[in-house]
Image 1 (tube, one colour):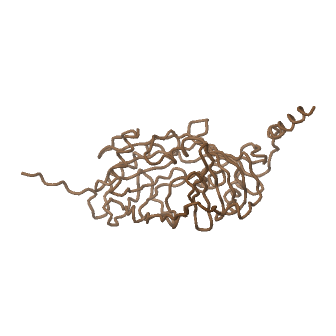
Image 2: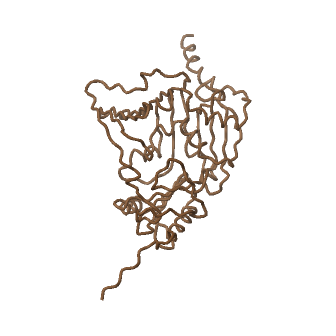
Image 3: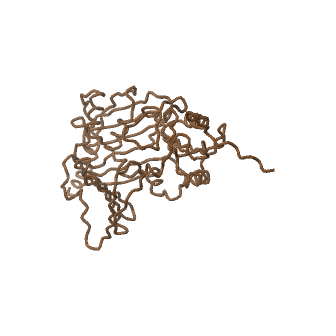
Length: 377
């Protein structure tokens, strides 16, 4: 009898999870609005994200490759956008990210080092906290176009919460995203599960969901770094990203304007964006143009090809294409033999069309390419 009682208690969570979820009376538009307004909803819990992009091995980017091609388990304590902590747990250790006001801290338990990141982060590599359901769902909905179609999905129980489902289908045919599915607490819009499905596919490319969650605000001490004696403390300053990029429309770094259009997409100004980066299109078919510094451009292009990127023939030369089920990247030489990166959750055909437009671009009153050198007699 005792053993039977213990077995029944152990099975109780699974039984509760299997119970049908009642229909939740909330419209798709209202649910979307609540999700976008949920940044101040506190929570704490345990989440897992799984992504399968099939990226090639990229030198010096092993952590990013693991994040975008595998499973990531993390605990999170979230009080507000300026006060939270995310802890990634692996078989070899733990690493934490803290946000304390405008300051970001990285705590590497394996090396016993706490690093304070000084300065704003207008551009950075992806980190595990970006894949937590609340942050991921809000970022996707914020990037979507008003023309995208939203509808309700059947409700489901996520980490013990009766969650309302929302599906967003992009209106643009050029995006690689077929649908975005989100389940959120209908009372406050807190996202609890996210799935991104590729166009023409039934299997999600990215899945992120909570297995445990509480909507109680964590204690302030849980989101502040408090290193023990002996922990190495260090600070690192971020470079002037705009100065490092310093790109312009023709790659000679003299301030010439970027093209007004690429591949039929109009340039879209984004307030607060970097001077050396241009964005084209809207919604989930947005394309980003990034001129690489001359000192590393050629090396990046060659490394991509050596890592397995496909070569693509464009009218003025050869480009490297990194293809994934969700995001594609095109690297090419143009202008004054500068290296450019074109990327987005868009089809390779659109990137190649944009690359061809970039090769042919002439800034007003300027020649895009330098004149050929005279032959020696």
